[in-house]
Every structure is written in structure tokens, then in C-alpha cells.
Image (cartoon, rainbow, N blue to C red; front, side, top):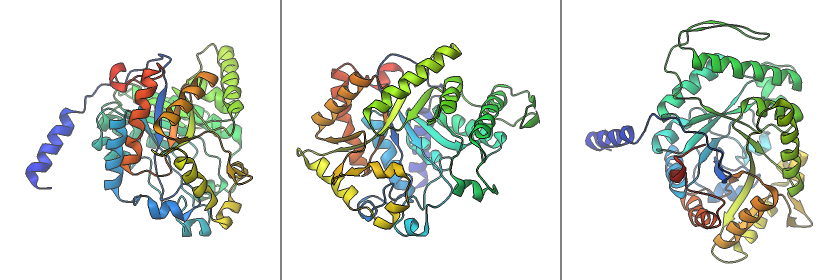
Length: 383
């Protein structure tokens, strides 16, 4: 890119970056995020290594980000982790190497204009000031589109990298997360300085600017009762992962009861789902089953029981997997929403070339026609 083209691109990006925080709107319509591809393969199979773009090439992320925004997604969720699964997993590039939820947010922010971007940051492993500074800068760069995916941490392999002999107990991790969120909000909201004397942190003084544009959206993927209480107290959305439809109603019921006790509205629930769309009937399901049948047996055996639900009798049974033609996937989403009341989906695309994301645009159009979704631009790009 020559200097003139670069200057033109910078001017265009700056002009298209309104410094307006994304508003909150509870309109009963579905929201859709993408679980960002952060490693060469998120499944223990070499097929995805061979068939997907190079995950460590930033140009591939820029192309995908533009396609995702064009298709009509509301948000990008940037996962993150620190420890390799195993030597065998790393040999097939399963979750290793992977991108950073903070560093890789920057080119994605600069490649897009209005889509929301959530970075994953673990409260157990960072000081509050680190997260406050990361978030303030990413909010500033994005013009108010950045949000924080709050993770308390639950893997000993990660904790040991940070010097822990054992993983801090569940209650301590959430007590730390609670105090961190309150302190980080103080740092964001008080440019003249804070004087925080808490149970776990002592922070006094003024943090350097910039400060966030508006109030960054907070989300959590908590699954325990304690985690649900945390999400009700602090989060704009709860991400959930379930293995069967009843899991959705269980989460919604638990959140409703806890929110009522706290005299607060529960955050909307977004469920993670695999999606694959093909033009020919039956082909998408065939491709999904091919992927799961190709799992590396050694790495698969190393994984937790959650992976054990994926196949049963040679058939894919994990829930929900949205596979089919455009019409079929749209009907599956509409049916799921109307049966369960789920507020939206965070979609995992096993194949993540830009054209795969663009396949969702006609699905969204059908959801709009059915009255369960409206385009982001029609609702001021709200969260």
C-alpha cells in the first residue's frame, strides 16, 4: 500500500468510526455473535488444519471481520487461553498456537465500523489496572464498540503458568472477580482518581487516560449458581453452552429465580452453537459427521467428558448443531428460539473462510421476515 492509499484508508476509517457508545436495547429480538476462530483448529482433527485459512495471518482475520460485519452479526467474541492442551494436541495445532483476545482485537477493530468486539480477559491472572487500561484503550480505538468477556479461570494448567500451586477455589475466584469488576468500573468512571481499599486490592491514585467511551458491555460464560449470581449483578449478557435443549430452560429458570431474589432483570442468554450451511440438502450434516469422525483418537481421549457427548452410535448428537441449507438453518434457529426463549446465539464456524460467514446473511434475512431478528442498523447497532 503506497502512502496515498494508506492515508486515504486511515481517513476513511477515522471518518467511519463514530465515538458513540453502543446503546443497550431489550427488544425481544435475537442477537448473533461469532465465536472467533482463535486457533488453527478448535476440534482435534487435521482436516480443519488443511481446509481453513492460516489463523496466524492477520490478513485472514481482517477479511473475516469485514465479512462478518457485512453479513449482519452483532458481535465478535475473541476467546483466549494460556496453556497448551498437551504435546499431542499441539502437534496437530489443536488450540495451539492461538491468538490473543487483546492484541488481535486491534486489527479487527480497525477493519470494522459498527460491530461489537468482546475480548476475553481472566480475572484470576491479571491485576485490575491491567484490564482497566486494556479496556479503556480498546474502547477508545473502537469508538465505544468494545466489551469484556469476563472469565474467572478454571484450568489448573493455566493457573500453574501464573505461579499457582493449585487452582484457587471457586468461591475465591468469584470473590476476586466481583471486587475486580467494581474496581475497574471505578477506574473507568473516575478520571480524577480512586481510593479503593478492598479485601483483595488496594488501589489509590489516578489512572492515565484515555477512558472508555460510555460504559463497556460485560459478558460472562459462567455456568455455576455462583457464576449466575455474578452475571446478574454485573453482565449485559450470559453465554451458555448446553448439550441438550433442556439445558436452555434450566439456565433460564435458574437465572430468573436468582434475578428475582436480587430484584434485578436477568441478562439475556446467548447459547453457543455450531453452524454449517451448504446448498445441497444433507451435505452440511455429512460434512459435520466427517469432521467428528476424523478426530485424533489420542487427543480426543485426553479431553474432558464434555467432548464425549459429541458422538453416539456414530452420529453427531451434541446440541445445538445447525447444519443444512439456508432455509433449513433458518428454520432450526426460529424453532429453537420459539421453543426455548433463548435470546440469541454465538456461532462457531468449523470452516471460517469469509464466504462461510457470508452464508449467514440470507439466513438473517429469513429470520427478519419471521419477526425474530432485525438488522443491527435498524436498531442503532445496539447491544
